[in-house]
Amino acid sequence: MTPGMFLDPYAAVIVGGGTIVAAMLRTPSADLARAVKAFATLPRRDFSAGPLLEQIDSLSRIARRHGPLALDRSVIADPDIAAGIAMIVDGDSGEAVAQALRHRRRARIERHVAAAETWAGMAEAAPAMGMVGTLVGLVAMFTQMGDPRAIGQAMAVALLATLYGAILANLVAMPIASRLRAAARIEAFERARLEAPLAALATREAPRPAGPIGFSPMREEAS
Image (cartoon, rainbow, N blue to C red):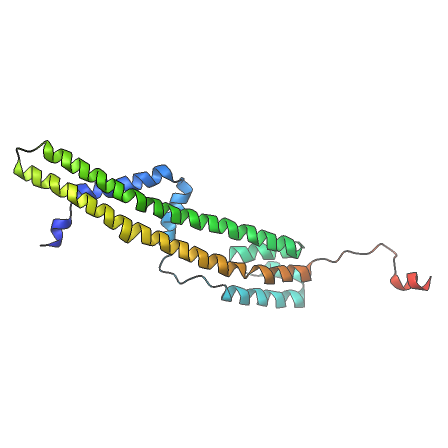
């Protein structure tokens, strides 16, 4: 028994190509591209909000010393923190900043879920494509009963297509989908920790409403 006996290009094309086509037909192109890009994130460590919280604390000290406008010159790589700081510089309230961060976090969750669902859909389609390859191989076998070599090749396509479909579904697509879901849950939980400090910073640095012109509390008490 050699590894080469488990390799068949026809079965691979039927299962692999059919799974990809099924994914393209059932998934919007943006979600499909996002699912492919998400594959590259699997080797990364789980997301942690610790470094971002330290950056927010540093930005808070800058705002306390030099005012919120000084934050506009800060270099911020994380898009959520950058958006929150931009709102703080513009004078938005803490509740507005918190609401914007919650919206961005939900949107990110939806994107992550869409990527995971794309891989889960491929896991569903792969066994079906394996069955299609099996049927194709059986049809080829029955139409060439007079040629023993052709019968063997057709039977190999039929059996290996089922094998490829099971492997692609259970050892590739479904594990990727599960890991993407787990990573999305961790990142959603960690990013929720960013809302409170940014909202507190926005509340502290929000412009105070000015009183009426000419109004003086001391003058009012004296009168």
